[in-house]
Length: 83
Image (cartoon, rainbow, N blue to C red; front, side, top):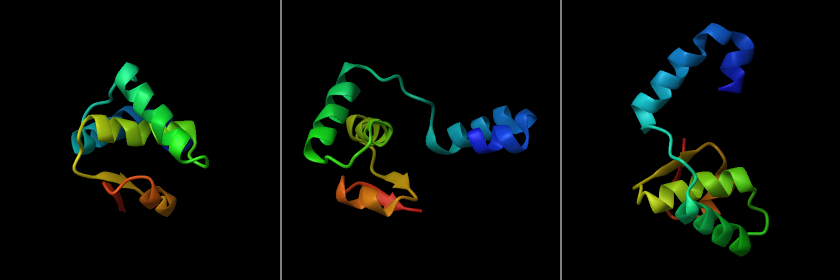
């Protein structure tokens, strides 16, 4: 979203709409997600908190696939697929 805001601030809402239409709505970080993210970070010292939170949401929501462009994520969950 930051990239869109830099290039064309008026496009942010439209881009957000496209993202949510494709991937679903955002999810609040609740206790279950926070705990799962903490467990992931404890298991993988190199995993950063923002990435752990994204992965944790996918796991808690029982997503079939967690998509990313970061190949390092493949070591964190068998649900991860590269774009």
